[in-house]
Length: 117
Image 1 (cartoon, rainbow, N blue to C red):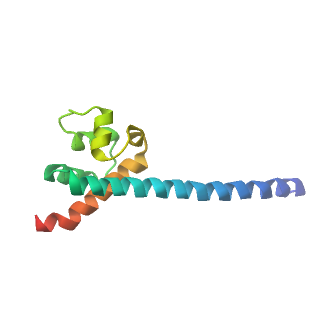
Image 2: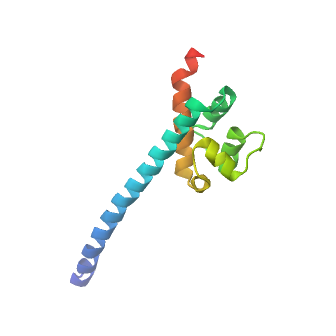
């Protein structure tokens, strides 16, 4: 590596480290938000069948459509109504990490209480 290449590599490391930390913080925030929303929904609004069906999504690759089919199986709710019922925003539906974390939060709650049902 020439001196020119070494000098140009050093300045880029600082923004990369900063953005890597920013990305991690962003992802952790989205994951925490989605998980908390999923748990709250499971504790206060979800029916047994919804939780059992959500549990089947854990560990699989699923899209928003599969998620929506579980939490609004009749398709009665428009996007805004569904988001409010789940404690999310419509924008959250475009964030896979929020949706996956929502399912995880609901699933964790269900696993904690399922034996008592």
